[in-house]
Length: 317
Image (tube, rainbow, N blue to C red):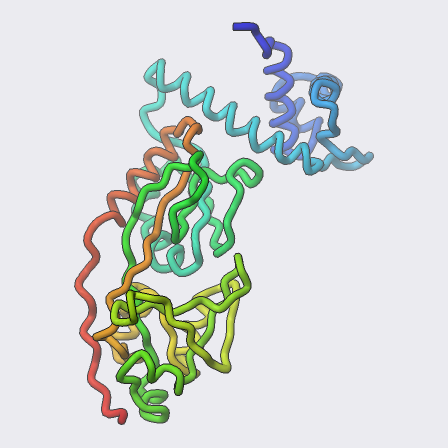
């Protein structure tokens, strides 16, 4: 195989990454025990090879260009993988260490993953987990994420998809709202109720509600005066304030149902679930820290959920 990376080029990439991390040629030079001029030459060598500017330079600071940021994320991952591979072969990688970056939806992050991180940290104290909570789809290559959790399997065949769980959906409201507006007995009754709307970031459309009892398990479009977007937990907050009915995951409102702050309705039509799937690039070498986190999430989440919480009785008519 023709050699494409000589020692000088690999050294230049290391110095470039060091400068990007520290934000200074001088600090990078001090850390690498070379001169600032050597760092500057290394960066210039890369820019000439790539045909793009990697840094915007001023007299006081350096800043990565957009191309430089993308190149830095890829190079940082590549160098990390090389170091992990070396440790793996030599037997030095006895304990996973470093940073794992994961993106996930807001409800799943708050109620399922974030509460697990102290236990993971206790098991792997040298691994730092950086979390990104958002309902938008991320780009693994451009944004430097190791993992993502999403609610549907991807069309991209370059991604590995591993199901974590099927989360049950429930429709809830406060006892006060149900006393005021009445308890819906059928799916058709929802048309006469305030149904809190959530707007999907990908399409801008209101998210349909799902029921086992609807015709052919079809999605049901509801109506209401309250709408929210970006963070699905806003709908739960509105429901807790008595604004109306909202469909959400049982794990989000389990404590509210148990303590009577919210009441489940249309239980006979419920039971429909939505999946949560762990994603990561197919071709990527999984470092020991990412592999440890994947195995931990599978261990903690890919198992039968606890039985549903019984719905408290309400006197609403």
